[in-house]
Image (cartoon, rainbow, N blue to C red):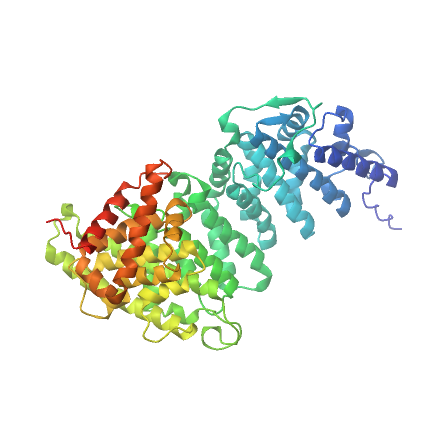
Length: 580
């Protein structure tokens, strides 16, 4: 006779389960009051220890989170999330409840193995629990900072290698992504500051160590742990993207967003820490095809645009790194030779450019336009830098020969871009790129200014011997772009002043380089402006006067004198007072 099947492990009884929930609710209520001092230490430990299960031999032991009922697990994780959120906010303020610090320290010491159990939840099939667990783990790492046990990071990153399930990879990717994207001092300006003040009877400690507010070390630790697994991870996602199915969408998007976040200047990570993550991008360019949906295209293009961070980084460097140059060359080649733009899923449905009806995916089109402009600008800048390097013994004719080859490629790339945009957007067939680029980006200041910088730098790089006598000169005319730009801002100098003061765009770089271009090519500028010369110069003169007023009151946030001198020089040209 067969033995009866063993009973499944269960919670000891309903009363204990209710008690556990009651303990968790008490913890949550105290956390909402910003203080844990009113809870005795014995009661404080109950939510972490009170749940038990009956083993096969009839004895009882503390139950694991994975054995709890889903609702109970979610409530417990939510309480931990409240704890870590409160700790992060109090840490930013510099005043923390001592009991909150003690509980966080106990968890960091892995008392009751709570953190290990949360990591174990990466295998759960419950998406709600998986999401909550990855979020709480990221918050725990942020508050613990460099005191993290590296074994936890190793477990998480090794799971990326061991598993073949994209949904399980999603757990670790989401944890690292949340840590890397965390912003220090991120209390929202509209948040009620009184809501994060501890009660008067709270036993608090003051934190004055500047390093306690800096999450950079924990970000670097997470990225370092990921580094040794990165090549394998990229290969896995290359395979997933090559045979893409919608069920893997969340994992793919999180992976691409994490990659973009790691190399983003906003992450404030060192070049050494992130150098590896600039490699292995070439295969992703090949994956941009009609079989990949628009949502994945957007994230791939976002990643490529971050690598080619032209306005904030590459445009300011004398010698460009190899990795962005390699990506730029590949994008130029993909547009010119592989007709990348034809595969753009601009509209849903079948047919060229996605076919179908509707207005189309304008943000996707904006991303691909900016990427092509950045790639062209990087290619021209790199060629100019290499060809003019005296250490290579390059002569003037060598530079001319190199630039002639580049110019032919650039003309074809920009021709295809122009054709693509005019097929998808209601622009006049005769409108040059130098004008429609402003209309295309009028709702995205950062894209607009960076696109204008790219066009300006390409024009300056190619037309170093003067404006060409072909369509490329009209297509890239910096003057036409600026005229279109001041039309877009309704000839309002205050908008230009706001852009100069703001650090959200690279308008200072653009204006400085444009004014230098005008100074060197005044005759061409006057000719191109035509009847709009007076209106164009009026806005520049009014801008100079506005800057002068701020400078006289010491209100301008940085040294704007180089721009002022160029504005004055252009004004003197305009007035006919050319100083020989």
